[in-house]
Image (cartoon, rainbow, N blue to C red; front, top):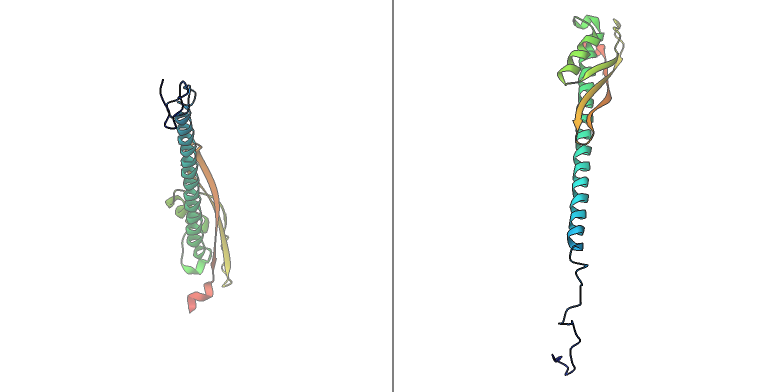
Length: 148
């Protein structure tokens, strides 16, 4: 019979470590698998959020560019040919967007005018596939400043 350091007899099945009975052997593996799955899902959510934010920023940039391009064309004496809506559509398309609205009527007066353009941009988002967002851009044009 084995002897303990304190002089007493050792209990059967005890060699200084608690008995596990094999029940705890796989619990660490399951815990690591759960942590890996949660980490993967969080990573995909962060990537999807980033892709959506980039898509929205692209749409906003396209709307702003289209509005800035259309604003001077509303003033006919400026020398522009074509329509402000067409100019906005050209700049929206150059930024991979589709023009869906333009409040940009031609105005021959020297009064300040504001152009509002709405565009739609499509992009892919991981886990969600093809997505689209709309953004509006606004630009003011003051013809009198051409004389300064």
